[in-house]
Image 1 (cartoon, protein in one colour):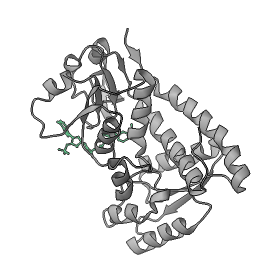
Image 2 (image 1 turned 45 degrees about the vertical axis):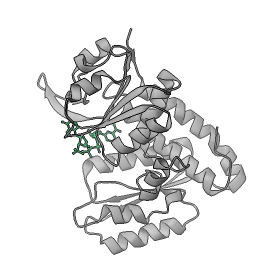
Image 3 (image 1 turned 180 degrees about the vertical axis):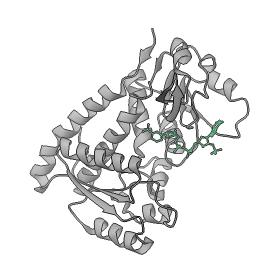
Image 4 (image 1 turned 120 degrees about the vertical axis):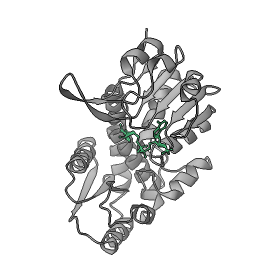
Length: 291
Ligand code: NDP
């Protein structure tokens, strides 16, 4: 019987644990953990993400600082804001909502965030710490995928894993996390030859491409665990639907466990951001990591 991995329920459980760790922080520091989110412009999807991050932070008992800036803001003004947030002791985590308008240099801005406050885990220092096996803040989506995998499989040691996609946001940190858990990892991308055969060897498949249903159900090794990060909007039966990279109906017949889209990885991404903010707050104040 295939297990459908309920990311929403897992995220709610994680949220409950996060809120339980806030009173101890408040007792020790006299304040609550603070998350600053920077949004430039009026992209509707980004506005929704920023609003829901702020709402979740407040719901769990954190402070939320939202900086909504005009589309035309300059690189220098944004760098100055990041510098102020870096210096502000009430801010434990800084997130710049991507993508930014074309005149802005995202890499320079993300790199200006102090790594101790890099709750999105996208700073080159965070990537380097992860690759070196050192403690740091890990990109939210792959961290959420890892939590789901461990909830299903327990130890991942010795398993063959394939990560389809090699972005800095998802694919690369995901591969590093699996390697650190002693998986044997294949990283596939748009130039990979014989993808179907490679997927068929894997005990763990993480799909992070953004192409609807590109991974076919009959590629999946029987009993494999499938984590579908991809999200694509398609029209099916005259209705708009959100679908993943994996052909869900057929893959669910072969896989041992699989995340649905929506309701799998998505709810984990926002909760791991909260988890990272809590972790950053504890570490910046030299408190032992919360349980
Ligand atoms: P990117 O576009 O940055 O990366 C996509 C990757 O897929 C690239 O490495 C690309 O290869 C690879 N790729 C493209 N075509 C193929 C192919 N035919 N076969 C194999 N690999 C291919 O996307 P992201 O990593 O940012 O996001 C991936 C997906 O995950 C998107 O749908 C995004 O919306 C979703 N997402 C969902 C989140 C959630 O919370 N649910 C959070 C973050 C992302 P190459 O490098 O060679 O170009």
